Image 1 (cartoon, rainbow, N blue to C red):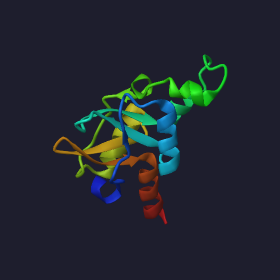
Image 2: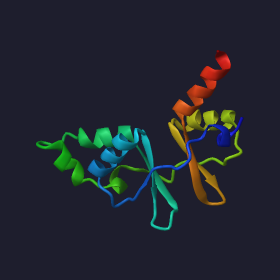
Image 3: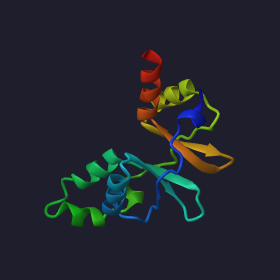
Amino acid sequence: MNMLDIMTPNVITVHESDNVATVCDIMTQAKTRHVVVVTPSGKIQGIVSDRDCNLAIQSPFEDGDPIKFAQGILVKQIMAPMPHCITPHASVAEAAQLMLEYKISALPIMRDGTLIGIVTTTDLLKVLAAVTV
């Protein structure tokens, strides 16, 4: 089993100039916990998790309206730059090892420099649940 078998295609992407409030809305609407940050030409710059957004919004510097505060924070301020990526033919074991080694919860899937999907810890847990049933 490889990444093509378990990945989520059609990754939600945002730009580093988007604000955190917008990204939180996008994640909520899409029911996803990760978005990939790309340049206008589609090159990966970073990744943002729902945890990154929540930590930014719950900042000790926020003293009023958290939505207004989040509108003033840009993605480039909270993203994890240059995320670890994996190829579509990498195995589930390779993905799990990378996630464990770097303590990350998502890996963009790249084919010839193009983002084609994403795999998350949830995807890996689904595989585990299927083989243990």
